[in-house]
Length: 199
Image (cartoon, rainbow, N blue to C red):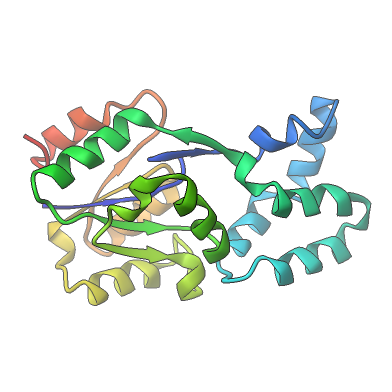
């Protein structure tokens, strides 16, 4: 069984609120911003990009009243990260130490992924990785999973994919992968044992 990890909220905590609680004095004002100018549908589109700037410029043009806050999302992006999910990084390390090949499929603007790599050495542990911003494809698009399988010459039925998004888990299963939906409270080690991926 080949184990394939998502990164955000599987190995590394991410939430724009980690940054914007330091920016907005009022929680409701922050949530209004996150529901409009900095909504998840736009953030996912930035994950399709190698460079953040064009997407940022277009968003500022659409929401000029939030120009300053949107620029902070770029300039202080590292503050959206909440640190490693240590128990899952430890599992990644166990797989690595026993000689398993490690893979990832992650939605990440390429520029921001390189920033994260500079902060978190475990992001260099993968033998193969698909970064959405390098490919111009984002999960749950079926094509990103098909690209992964083709590039690393892996049969879908031998792949176990872990992601925090139910949509992405459904999409992985649709191409024939096994998948674990990881959310807070899930014991990923127990799930990997149950699937036969960790002994």
